[in-house]
Image (cartoon, rainbow, N blue to C red; front, top):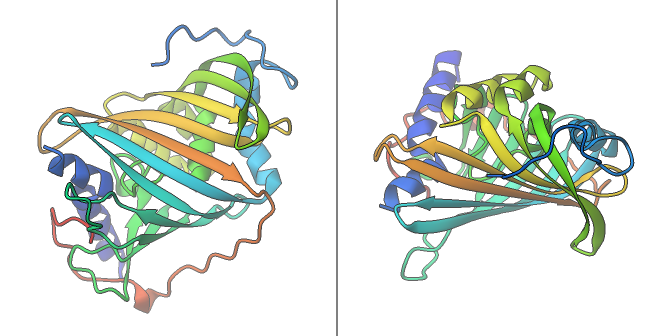
Length: 284
């Protein structure tokens, strides 16, 4: 697949992206304190959050569960994913499940997604793609940097978004899945995150900073006593190209079983689909 085909697949994915497509079919963080707010051990809230991505890299790997909720036209849909992630190599694999149709009948097969620096690979994508082929998308070519298009936010990209934290408040201790955590609430700036991000995530986050309705991302972050992200909820908004209305998206990432074995093998060139993707045809 040559570079022109890669770019074409990326541009087309904007039209047939999972979340955007569902939005077409569906016909704040207040009072954040300044950086001086206490963040528990390790410094201020902002400083602790900006170290979260490096702490995940030191943890090496984990399992991940994702959910993406979208509200559009009075309808709310949720896309769920589950898999594993290697933070040192920025490689992950997720199985993403799309919502049932209104009658309650499962309408889509689970989509396998491989996450890599600068690229998203999808299998069982539908939209005219053969079942045994992968679709490759350059994340920097997506107006949202693949923070929402794939139906799941890359866990390491979500953590690196915290590098752009502008304001944050430490809200105290709570529990996530039986683990004691520290709860932080704040707002991150996508453009600032892009400037501070790793080489693999920088172009995608820069694209998102330009493509979303606002570059400000309200979030709630839950870190364990080692500073590792256990839960991260981020809220995005983008303009639907079809309706011109603003779509609100809430992405939640849960991380657990740190150190679990992760072995992600990216598709070979001959296994990547080089044909045209049917526009406006949802995955199935």
